[in-house]
Length: 257
Ligand SMILES: C[S@@+](CC[C@H](N)C(=O)[O-])C[C@H]1O[C@@H](n2cnc3c(N)ncnc32)[C@H](O)[C@@H]1O
Image 1 (cartoon, protein in one colour):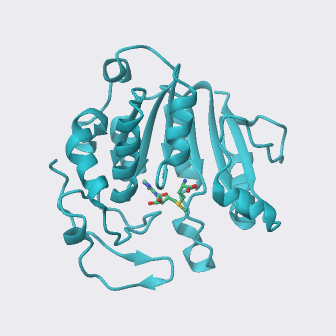
Image 2 (tube, protein in one colour):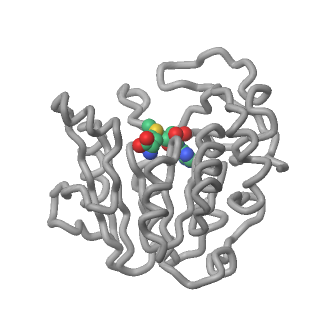
C-alpha cells in the first residue's frame, strides 16, 4: 500500500507530546491527508497487533479505498445500487461492523485515521465475510472533498467525535458550519446527518450549528435531541456511562434542500 509519507504529527488535545516514531511503529500503514491548518484529530502513536498488520496485507485490496484514487463510483465498488452510509471516525470499528452486518441491504464506508482501528475493522470484516463495507485510512474532510460525489449519501454518521473539551481547542471540533455544508453537499435529498456525543457542551454546539445551518431540518423538531435510533448499537462504553448517570445526546438532521 502506497500511503503518502507526509509528516505525521502528534498534537494532542493537551498540547504537543513526544514527536517520535508513530510512522515507524505503524510501518507503511499511514493515514492519507492533505496539509491543513486545523485538524480534528490526534494521530495516536499506537502499535498495531500482528493480526491488524496481517489484515492490511490480506484484506486491504478488497476493503481499502484511497484518497489518491479520487472520486468513487459506489455502484461499481459494491456491484449494485444501494443506500450508501458513511461513518467518520469509527475508532476500533465495532459498532460500524455491527451495523454493516445488521443491514446487508445498505452499503457502508468507514473513514478513520487511526491505523490499528482500520486494521481491526478489516480483520473482523474478513472473518465475518462482510461484503457491504469499505474503508479509508485517511482524513475524512479530505475524503469528502475529493472522493465522495454530491447528493450520494443516504446517511453520514459521526459518533462520539473527539470532544476537544478545552476552550482553546474547541475550534478543532469537526462539527463547524463549513463542515456541515460539506456534508449537506454530499447527502441526497432527505439524507440524514446523525451525530452522537457524550459531552454535553459539544452536544450544545452541534445543536447550535445545525439549527441555523441552511438546508437542514431537525428530524424531531427544532432544538430537540433525538432518542437513539435502533440502528445505532449501544456501545459497552455507553452502557457503563448510563450506569454512572452520564448522558448521551443523539442529533439527527435531514437535508431538505
Ligand atoms: C473519540 S473517538 C470515537 C471513536 C468511535 N466513534 C467510538 O464511538 O468509539 C473519535 C475518532 O475519530 C477519529 N477522527 C477524528 N477526526 C477525524 C477525521 N477528520 N478523519 C478521520 N477520522 C477522524 C479519531 O481518530 C478517533 O478514532
